[in-house]
Amino acid sequence: MALHTQQSLSGFIASEPQRSVTENGDTRLYVRIGQPHFRREGNGDFTVLEPSFHDLVAYRATADRALTRFAKGDSFVAEGYVRTFQVERDGELIDREEFVAKKIGHDLARTDYRVDRTHRSVAGAERDTPGAQRVTAQLAGPARSGAAVMGR
Image (cartoon, rainbow, N blue to C red; front, side):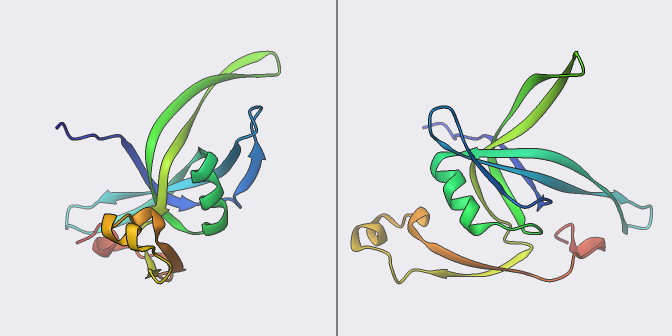
């Protein structure tokens, strides 16, 4: 069977998560996210550059879960796709894009957390379904720079 892959995105939640409802009655999550950027120097060190900011949305159960688990400042990893669209502003069409997260979780490299498996059902334990696990997240601390940020 072929390996299924999708686009991924990592960064930090830059705004308070916002809940809305679609025309179909589905929950929608919207957040502004930031992506850190770095420049590798000739001596091997990394210089922290200004982050870029983008829109992220999620729908239905993913949105419901993310709304209860994420807050401004949290680091995340998401799987999904980029949706491009146009909006009209002052009579002019503007191209926009947003990342549609089908799955989203806290970034292991930047978040300390514990997994609570006490409520896992027997059937769930047999299937070992991570979706049934409860995660309590705590930010790992202040942002780091240098080689440690790059996972080295």
